[in-house]
Length: 235
Image 1: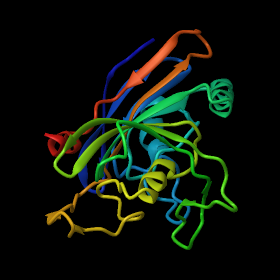
Image 2: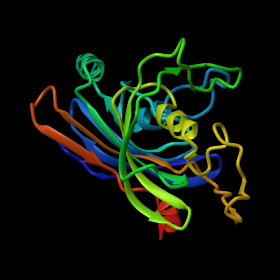
Image 3: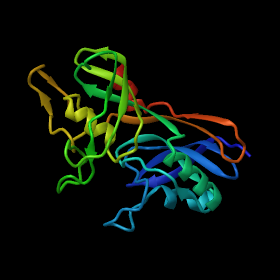
Image 4: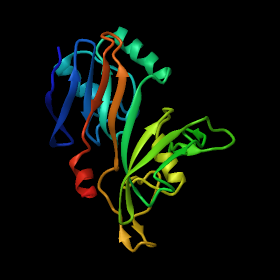
């Protein structure tokens, strides 16, 4: 069974929608809105997260990867323990390809480039992931410039490894901070450009997930359009 539609829920006193991108008896994919936790909060156990929102409607589901709370976009879940194991193996073997869209302040060094600086997670008291050439682990993210307007660039980002905050950390390190990312860049005004870059959301979106369905062996390419606030900014 394949279903597309909208699941309505309440979050932080506002009415929002979680789009169901794909669902069958083994797995499902959603378009996670920015501001929704992908896993349970370690400090506030009562805070809503993806499973508490989905399970009353769709039954038990298993988390196979994560998206930052501030990051929107395509998010994959298993609906059986067997599928959870199968998808986890695909992630471990790098057989699942993910693409992101990021809006950054600045101009990239070239239209296509890669960042392969080693990363160390939980590198400081703010739990940031930092480039660390001594204690960091190998990490690589590939980028492609999609659009450049004034002082901002829209990038396609493909992480080849899967560390927490990998894209955010890599871009911040080369002075291409993602707009709205106050954890990795405290910039509120770009004085060099004479422009205000205040932005209400993190300008990072998980655009697509591509993999072979473990149960059906079909090629899956699940896409979620960038949210309207990112589109408005680009336009």
